[in-house]
Image (cartoon, rainbow, N blue to C red):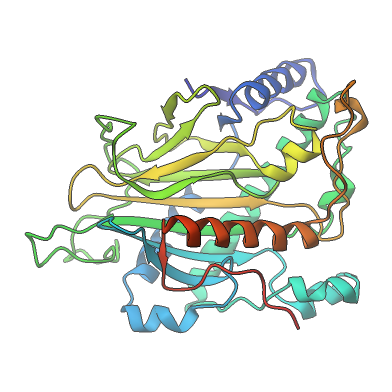
Length: 360
């Protein structure tokens, strides 16, 4: 079972110590947990979902103008080979351009990390998306404080690494069209339009359990996230996020509108010398045609020049498992490995290529 942890206590209080211990157990045993008491206002979450639904309802040719060579920027859409469900994504970085990175004092040798993100021509979309992103990044900083405590470090240990974080936020939408219904839209309708179909990402949507977690079709293949930690809010008609534990057991993460799902990323696993588990996970195809799922996902990274190597408190008799790496170097490694995996397995048919970042 995926634990649910209330993170409202102050991290340096006695109650905070208990929270840190619970988070530590979850990170070491499962790599996933949900948090409540996170402080992100419901209105901020609702506004982000409404903005995403409006954008995804645009004609495909208009969204396609926001495609970008970097797989973590702009709009993309793909379908896994043999799958009848489309996945659409819009993604942006906390530092949106090389010019802004330079203004923050980032060294010139790192500036090609920062690819200019194309935004929809919709000021309200950017405001709602950015407000949610900022609020969840703040939760990420709180969780990094809890991580520090459970690792035997001062609660502010990771703060210098987060000074100019290069976190990303992605809005992902999964939709299984009904071939028997030509009126079934490929994209969600604007929830503000009273003449359109019901909002597919309403807060009170009722989840449907998948019948067979080992044989159900998958729209997003199993993978581990690349960053420190990931925070996800999800809405939809079904519980689609599935976690595969080390023993092979598959757990489904239930949809809870008051919670953020948290999982450990590969960089945090390296930082903790594999004490924290970067658990593989996937997204299942909606069990019935017409069903949808949408997630607002924040991938938390430190500053681009942060040197990440196993912490002294995590290194045992077997020594460090990894050498030092920065987010700058790590992103290229991760993207190359992902692209090779997808090409070898034929798991995805991307409309925007999955490739290492473009330089220059």
